[in-house]
Length: 390
Ligand code: PHB
Image (cartoon, rainbow, N blue to C red; front, side):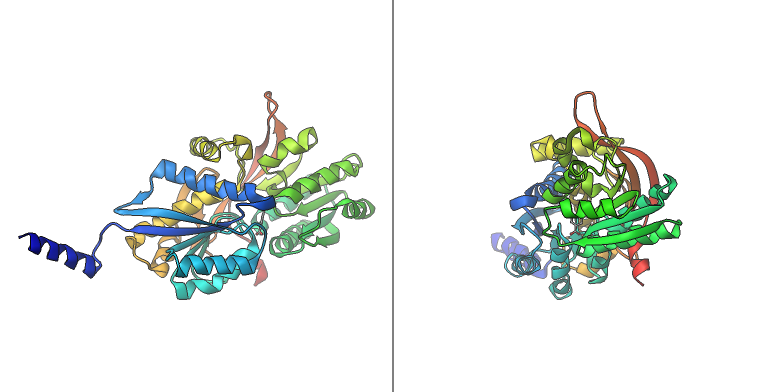
């Protein structure tokens, strides 16, 4: 009898019939160095999702494997993704703060039979590099085009753009310029800075000399965005009445205390404010604050990661835990849900997230903390970037 039971159990195992499995998810991001706080936010969002939804999907249990790429480094990103797939046998890849790091991994996906859920990298074209990419963050096209409309509504006629010279910066410049000009404004000059730039005084001088009424800027959130906003204030541009316009990368909540009172009134457009007023967001923020430890460090990559986990859980559910990247990705095409940021869905054509973009103004609470106060909503925005590139 005992033998029979053992034989039956072995037969079930060998037939590949459903039994509890550990499903590994490899997450690549900056977990040390100058951008460590952004990676910490990936982890906080992932931990918050697991704390509120459990680590089991059906019979299967998930396991997260983290890999550190401190700064944009496509070669290191690719090597680590390869190691995760080949040595660790991850069924999913996720994370990716910087565009070049995400781009470097897309050629691996099809052969590896692994979906990639991008939790931050924001260049429109990433989703076109493989049919196995889905994205739960934003694109700089999506966040920057509304700012051009706001600028025109507020009477800005001449603007200058300043961006980091790589994917999301070039996209932000194109989004702002084309929208601003369509609305009747003129971009008098477009400056692209190397990603490594950290002395912004010469750029501020050019902005001053340009005769523009407003500067539109994009840099990837991190130490340099803080430096850029400080340089705008310290070089007298604010006092000279040159308006500062940017997507929300430039006023991430974790930077606001260091910018101080001079941040008050800065207008940005973005997909997520930690102060977003909804029950879903309150629950998320409570879980994410607990996960990150220091609430002052909470910032937008946490919500991209939290929603990225939602997408991965749906993929695992749909495939019953089996490794089938096509089926997994197909299962989330058209998926819609209530995110902490507001209502969202995965566009079935682009596999990028459709979402509200909010105009926000930096404000100060009575307790001295700063926040991005949502003051206007552009509802259900798809990514305009891919259509523009065609
Ligand atoms: C990117 O590299 O795509 C990126 C990084 C940080 C941001 C936005 C975009 O804040």
